[in-house]
Image (cartoon, rainbow, N blue to C red; front, side, top):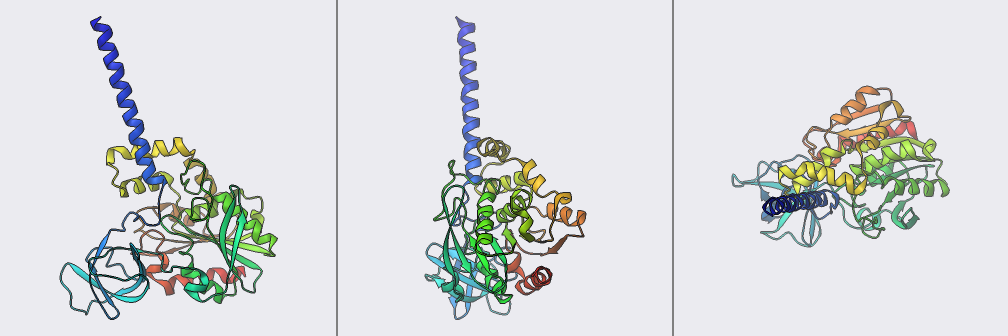
Length: 375
């Protein structure tokens, strides 16, 4: 009986270890596949508000709080906009003072825990920017998708798609600029967003399935009278744009792509997301395998969508070396392989999907130069 007992114990131990491994992988993949706008992304630490004054806010000193540019500052019940670092204002060695542009919601109280976000605006195009817009429901694969349509005179429409850690309020950063070029803008919420259908598994797929919602928005735009469309995506939204350009049945109506911080290496992004949720390093490979098993996401499909040889339309990429969520090596390779179609605008000192925030004027000038020939 002793050998049988020992064998049974060993089998039980193996089963227990296997179950624990599966559970650990599932936990780790949840951290990566259920990103929420109220959670920080890698490189977005929680900061403390140490003091406020007229046009100023004092924050914990950190590489993040020292970033150049203009950012949202968000926390429970509060959203503000901060501008450049004010080096000439007295402060302690462990704090930094930034210009406080506005408080859009709530109040910035001393002791508040906040983080920087690329998303400046809250509200709608009308309440945030003073631009007339139409609230739309676009019929997608899983149901109705909320969208804002900001009308303008041109027959080429821009379809804007946000990415990880933000909402459709993020594209409002550039909607006023696009409107100044008389480009109609369709700003889309897709599956998993607030007000949009939830995917059946409740998980994000890093653009691998979400692109079909962008395809529905393209068809809506064409039905409404657009002659051509420009796909403009951030992060996972940029990956969705690449998938649509490669696979949509109406891809011949795409005249260009604007890709900000595109997710081109899904495994690296999954590992970074899981690590940002304090997943222990030994579990990160399990997170990747579990995510692939649960969603069917596979690197080959995004590699095919981003294949330089298959690219048919001009593309402008905004990316930089300080993006720790979507490594910019893929953007560099894409630009190097197709210099005839791809322009890479490098942005330093900018985290994921915050290329505009770091240098808005330079960003918009690059965008203007790219878009003008397409109008």
